[in-house]
Image (tube, rainbow, N blue to C red; front, top):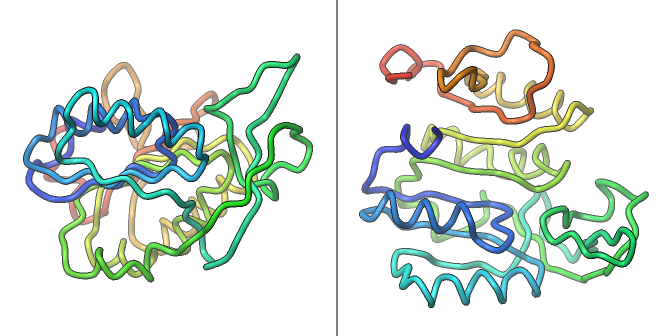
Length: 208
């Protein structure tokens, strides 16, 4: 559903791309857009780049670092349970210190410090960073306020979710959920973890 809301011809950010499933669909369904995909875990990034090459995703640019609200080195964990590594649950260590697994030292940056994004039109942002979404949003406040992109976030019920909601509300966005393929404004309904942040000024014009 999220992809169907995005106007083609601008720039899309895939933050927490993992091995590139959403990157692939962004690239194929938005051929006139540039897809900027961020994945700091070297093992995931290697697979992602193979997918980009194999399917000739010529409108994709990859970035080998994490995003947050600081410029620094951080530790990330790829969790391991019963000797099995879970690539899709990789996260910044401080977001969940209980998880054990393979540790990586990775670079982190703020989107608002990214020179390449200061003079382009960003239409949409997807964020799936395992309890670190608030920090990504906080480090992109200026970019979000300037571009007013559509934003998709996976958010578990936690302090991270509540802080993300407060920040996005301050930026004059409304929160929606997908109910039977129809976007409905979020009113504290239970059982949801996928959220759509829509600029308040665009809510009436979008075709849900």
